[in-house]
Amino acid sequence: MTAHAYVGTSWKMNHTLAEADEYAADLRAHAGEIAPSIQPFVIPPFTALDRVARALGDTRVMVGVQNVHWAPAGGWTGEISARMAAEAGAVIAEIGHSERREHFGEMDSTVNRKVHAALAAGLRPLVCVGDPEAEKYRGTAGEFVARQVKHALHGVAPGDLARVMLAYEPVWAIGESGSPATVEEVERIHAVIRGALAEAGGEDGAGVPVLYGGSVNLDNAAELIASPLVDGLFVGRAAWTAAGYRALLARCGAVLGPVAR
Ligand code: PGA
Image 1 (cartoon, rainbow, N blue to C red):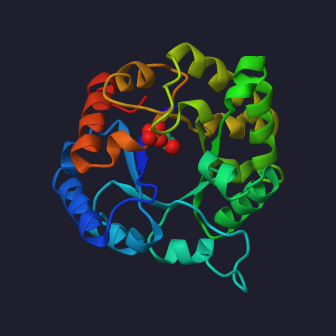
Image 2: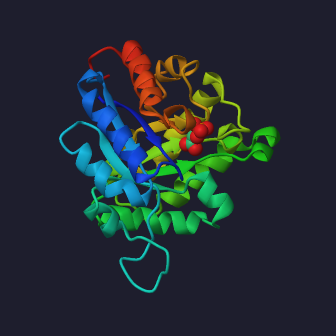
Image 3: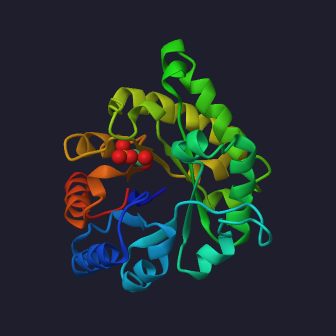
C-alpha cells in the first residue's frame, strides 16, 4: 500500500486570531515546498478553526479540531458538536488526547462515543492513546495501549476504519516535562497497536495510519519518520511557530523523498 506520511501539529490552547492568521499565511505561502510524500495537517483552537481552514483551503494542508462532543446537539454548555466543527472547516477530529483524559475526565467510553460522532459527521477521527509512566515501568504499556485502541474503536464498522487515524502519545513523553520515546520504544508499541487494529478490523485495520507524538523535535524527527512502523508524526511545541513546523516538514521530506511510501 502506498500512503502518505502524516506530519501535523495541534496548537493546543495557543495563538490569538492575529497569530493564527500569521501562521496560516506563512504556511500557505510555503505550502508548495512540502514534499508530496507528506500529508500535512494543522489543528488550531476552536476560535481560529474557521479562518485557518479558509486560509489553507486551496493548499494540501488538512485542518482539524482538538475535540468534539459526542452528541449531535443539545444542552451541553461549552461544547462543540462534530457537525459544527465540520462546518467550520475541520476534516480531522482529534479525540482522547492525554491532556483531555487527565484534566477533563475523558474516558475510553467517551472517546468511543466521540469517534462515532466524528465519523457520523464525516470527520476523520485522530484518536490519541498512550501509556502513563507507571504502566511503562510496570512493563504493561503494550496491554494498556491495546486496550485503549480496542475501546476507542468499539463498534466501528470495518469499512469506516479507513477514515480513522491513531496517534501513539506516551503520557511521559508529552510537553515541557516529557522526554521523547526512543525509536525502539515507539516501534514496540506501534507493533502492538497494529495487532490491535488487525483484531478490530482485519485487513481494514491495516489501512489505519499510526502516528507518533510526544516531544518530537528537529533532532529526533528524521529517525522517527524513517521507521517503517511510524506512519507520521504529531507535534506540539516544536511546531507552534510556522517556521518550526516548516522546518520539521522539510526534515521529514528529506528522509521520505518525493514519493509516498
Ligand atoms: P509536544 O506535544 O510535542 O509538545 O510534546 C505533543 C502532543 O501533545 O501531541
